[in-house]
Image (cartoon, rainbow, N blue to C red):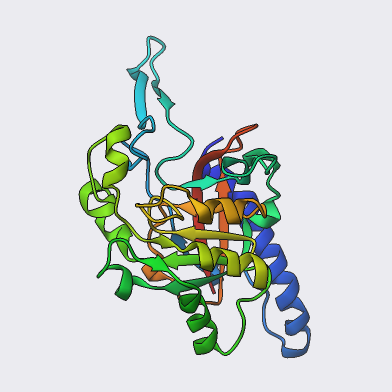
Length: 275
């Protein structure tokens, strides 16, 4: 099943929910029901290719051609094999990735991957500091500006501005070297452990995403933000893109991974729907 086929059921679910809500309103207003044409669709996923960014110790993406061309029976045919690590490109970290007994990819409820999104933009600070840690104060600043708390059940997206460097590994993640020795060379922003703890203690979010290689910053060695979030079964979406095209609220997120049984992560096709 292709990623395009995977998103169709979720899109229909959003449309149905939106239509039900708008139908109640339209009974008194006479307005027509909502449809997919009422939304702008923003693709939040990078494609997979030889250029795809992977963690420096992970297997990279490989696409091998099985056959491409005219068959002896007179029709055109193409088929490929691909191999990839769970954690690379735009992907999901399932809770089991950093929490013993946490949910695997196939165990995640679709309802935890679909919902209302908010965007917290820290790019002005992050682009000036490759090791920037998104703080509790950054999250509270969003609430102050919008004069409300981060809504329950939100999918929180963190915009650092670093997706503009993708797939230039040096500018995007600090190094193009690979292997264990390259880990110490990683430099990119992430979520501070204090902010992660605040989110699980004070707010009730479904999931979190970021436009860098990891929810923890590049110089992390203990991956505290991963541990904190995933110990509460909150999945993370990493290597997102096009967050600059989103408003700060008022949009829906659909983030559907390849359904790998027992997987700690998986390639992710994430989109935003903007009314």
